[in-house]
Image (cartoon, rainbow, N blue to C red; front, side, top):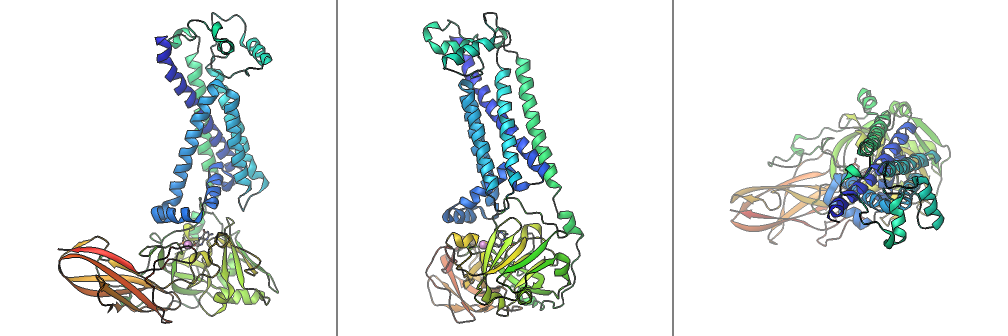
Length: 562
Ligand SMILES: Nc1nc2c(c(=O)[nH]1)N[C@H]1C(S)=C(S)[C@@H](COP(=O)(O)O)O[C@H]1N2
Ligand SMILES: [Mo]
């Protein structure tokens, strides 16, 4: 019995590994099928991940954005991978005794994958195929792996395994292949009293298990899994549009941006750049993989409550009189003091004339925009038509839009939070009513109309910084897009409010930097700031969370002066 005890954990380990290999084969083949179809969104991992994103409750999404920021998707994929690994190990373990249960487990995963793929907003019936084919491949792999550890020659065997299995099936106790020791061991389960003294030899040597066969089968399945996964990735890469983007030349604007006054950049060391580079621009979206939209195939459809529906190609769009503007974009999920905001120079076609060309029917109050990956955003029409520089943007900081920021085209509407204005990879504008159509976030309880709230934060000194006593530079960023920042005040330890110096800005639609000098005495101090916008509204002290229409509250920073 000592020999058996030593071998048991190893056998369980091998069984668990079989589950892992079968799952890998399933995912690898599914990836290959998705690649062959050129359907990224049908890859089971991505489809299930995207489904997770859609099912994520608002509080969890805010938590994820707060703690992982633009890495939220990596964290999700790692979590998903960990979950699948655990499930695969369990499938392996249960299939040691009950292969059928393991197979049902794999099939269940396949069904989840099929369901996830078919419920994506951009789903097509073929999207069921990768998960289905993958699940079948995983099941086949599990059977093969289970068979490979069956003893091939057993001196003690009286009947061939087929007959033993058939006999067992007749008793209704087991199905063939439930354990690596199919045959004799199945019989033992019928009655312990019939169990031989030494059910399993201590070492594989005399067991009749063909180690070569086990290893070869395992390696074969692993190879198929890896080849499928890599092949699938390579095939899916065919759709990558980075080279198309690199070759694209954008026209010059008919209406260039006003020059940014050099002093718009406050000179405090460590201060936030006035213009955010494309690389540093925050990214918030529900896209688990970046939509690859080829401008040569791109169209923008304007329809719904319009007199004359319009369809524009990318060339059509570039032929329009383009405008270039500095506009600060910010996210409703930004917390007090947060950095989910960025300021860029956008190039694009003004949106209002396009809508007027289509002829908006009276009663329409919403533009429901849709992206290539099926995301929907709603924008109040009155904001788009009130004269502000709402645009279908194609350029960002002198380049075509980065793929992560909406290539080849996105909406930008100054003054509104991103979720009600800044549709990336935009392909469709439906003129409609708030009473009729609901966009992704508004369906989840976020506000229909969400003007950016008047906001200011302290950028330097950094929170919990230790600074030398004396003259200390205090500086920060404030925004109230399209209303403009009229004043920023700051205070120390709850003392009197003092006016900060405001840097010049090119217009009402960008953020505005502010600076102040502080004669700092040693000790621990709390700095606070608040902004007042062009309408006279002052950022309120009361803190509210981002849901449902943006966070409020004063930003404060604690610093140590030595
Ligand atoms: N297609 C698509 N567009 C989208 C989103 C999205 O999830 N999908 N998110 C919106 C939100 S919530 C914000 S704040 C901005 C962010 O734009 P950025 O990633 O370029 O900074 O994009 C908006 N446009
Ligand atoms: Mo956002």
